[in-house]
Image 1 (tube, rainbow over the protein chains, first blue to last red):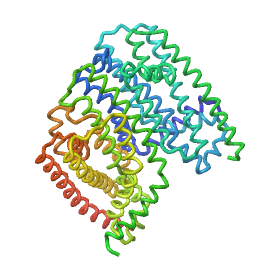
Image 2 (image 1 turned 90 degrees about the vertical axis):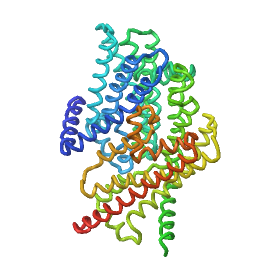
Image 3 (image 1 turned 180 degrees about the horizontal axis):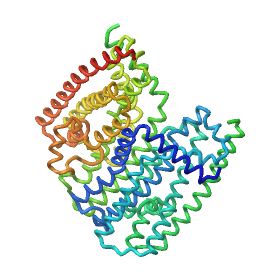
Length: 260
Length: 266
């Protein structure tokens, strides 16, 4: 079965599953939306009671939060739910069966854990971006939109790579504890403009673990502040992606040869 | 065997379970300071851009606020609502009802033992690390003592709030998502993410009427020495009032719920 067909079928199945408990699904959607809205809401409260972050006015920071919510929602929908079940599947032996399925194992665990509940976050992120752009009366050119979308794709590749590395570690170590929480905590640094950090952390978030892709770079593009240095982050993601693929393949190889 | 002995025996058993998960607790030593580091830079930037005081908080106050919010969070944390719901859903509660201690006491003993373990594996290490990294200072001995008493009462209060949420699973079977929603609301309304003063005078006044204020925000104010002796005593009295009120509600509802559960052959 082609990966795309499998993707569509998996999502259909997930939607059918969720619709069995409609009320529970709706409340879960509101719950997750509320949770993901907390930090943007806190930022808004900070701006209401102070001058906020240097170099970022209220509408700009609103745009920034909108971009983060948009990218984060797609990340949560596709890549972040896997660790909830993967550790259990490896322990119970269910993961061994996945290796026998006629579909790419990574695609299987990713698509079957699709989190439809985050769809509301996605629309909210888009809504906030449009609202803030209108409020700022920023002229957005087609080239900027294309560049913005391009960097969103790169940001998602970055998130996917982190998820693949995390999933590989789960398969290797089995009992992984709070690795997922650690990665989420790390990503939270990307939820604020990079200029608030000291030069050491700022350099790390720009060029080594490019958390700036999760909101800063796409926001700067929409604000017509494109810099050629942003491409360095894209290059870093390319390297991380290659490492993630290698690590994943090596993990499966070790798992198989260990009689898993 | 007296009630206290039974309680301690049950708690001891749960404490040993905690040891099996010690690495999960110890992960907080890495994760918590990382979370605090983000808050540190956020507020540093805000204070540099806004002056030395925001709503009466200095930068140092704000950092202490977030450190304490996290430490209190570790100390009062429990998932009794979800655990009770699962026991009801899967029928495990029947076994608990046969044990020589009430269901409520079993949950309390388990949670107390769990948090006692967290005190050594999570709360104290995170506090020591924060103490050196973020230079936390104690305001005064009375403020610290009030804080410790307030923290103990906050644990009981949070336990009762969560247990109460779990009881509703006797009547509504699929309430997991509702519990998560309430869980997030409690965290927010207790001031975990931002001091409640930032919500404005109206919402701040409303928050004081709810028990969540007394789980975290108020306890932090005790440590910061923002309440005088009398106000601190009043605060502890209100905490006790909420604990007793919620305990009575829990007793009444749990009695009715267990009767219903037993009648259905649960």
